[in-house]
Length: 293
Image (cartoon, rainbow, N blue to C red; front, side, top):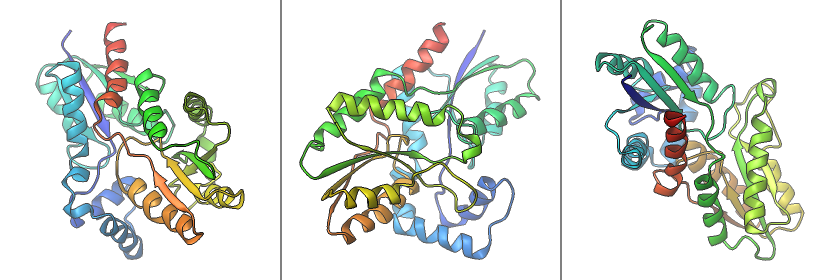
């Protein structure tokens, strides 16, 4: 059996002209209005997306780290909403003669609208490749390297300092699709808090779409509550995400920062893993376990 590893990521625009097809793909073919496109453009402009090669090539860098950790050549990368698309990657894998694929998504937690979206698309694409088997690693957060990364970053932020409020956050999901997602995220934040000796902390959900019913409380409301509770320093821990992108650099570092600083308090946010070797080892470990099972 000839086996390939497929790393799946959301994708990110590299230039302003990418935004229309990118948002159209995210919205399942529904073309955004001129106003919606203008709002999104302003957000990417605000985080310096068009001049930041790190943001534009994050997936490639993570693939390089993972490939090095696994010491394999058969590593492919595909995006859900940008080229190199999942269809393109599967075609390349098939052309190279692979008959088995192990897939892992950069999101550490499984949700129906997150990893589930990749899963459904993979199954649809693979109908045209009956000779290729595929296994999907649905989540990989429960690996020691995941916890050690966030523990070490949080400890470096002096979380036990007086008047400090620590806020753990993950991407919100529609309430109709929560499943085990909320429990798994809460379990992970509890473990990290316990590792650093936090007696009091907050769990929040962020970056929800502006329509429908989404899992809460929102990070904005939690920050406001922490300030009411007397916090003078807010430390955001967006551990449900893996890299710097618009939902971190805009939603956290601009919107959340403004709420905190307008109240006269101090805003801090833990560094994202991006291609950090320790953190990526959690993904590598999950892949090795699946290959060797």
